[in-house]
Image (tube, rainbow, N blue to C red; front, side, top):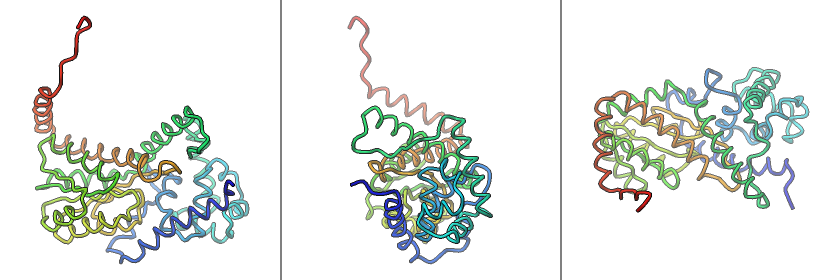
Length: 332
């Protein structure tokens, strides 16, 4: 039998709470409180809720999930109605507002309504992007396209331009760049490696956890290490990035959650914004969002070294032409 919305909220909150429990065992580093995204240009309340969800208490997570599942509806709910939907108290809803740095529930409703109105005006307000077993194929295609487009758009909104600038400067000045990620994040790491190599930079991707650790142990000041983890809780990536930081390298984390464990060993935080769905967890929209961040980082680096990057791209493009078969003519 299909689960009720309240049951689904509780199950999702338990999963997010497990990530929160694992993350809380690590001591906060200096300045870690600044990692949480606050209100500001380029941010929006739905992106912020999604990013902070794993760091919230379970009852507050249910409030966030209730809002995120249908923002347009949530904007019309009174505080009592939202509390009932999330099976919690009005006091918890007030605490939730404080946790996401919104002054009051009235301000939260305005922020959600503003987001929903903007999305509706752009024709981007989704009815539901979750894929069900009985969906028609055309509906599946539409939902995947909508989810990927939303991941790119929300990631662009969540990306801190100042932090991105710091990451670009670090890579431009680096003696070498080592990139860590496992699973789907490992493919993103390899993509960044080949991009940086093509413009003449020394870069290595280490999707194997043991190789990542040995790489991190040999880094030194002047090097850069980049860790990619959608959840920010992947032990292999966290350990490699932490060791790289201890070795003196400047560290950059790319993750979906601003208060996840990986941020505690990162000097620079680049945040994606993705809401994975049932059939897509951890491998699809999250990858698209991470690739968006990687592309922004790469283009920024290439801009800094425009002449040398353009020359390197021309050389590598010319070299690859010998590896392509000529196209047949119309009469061939």
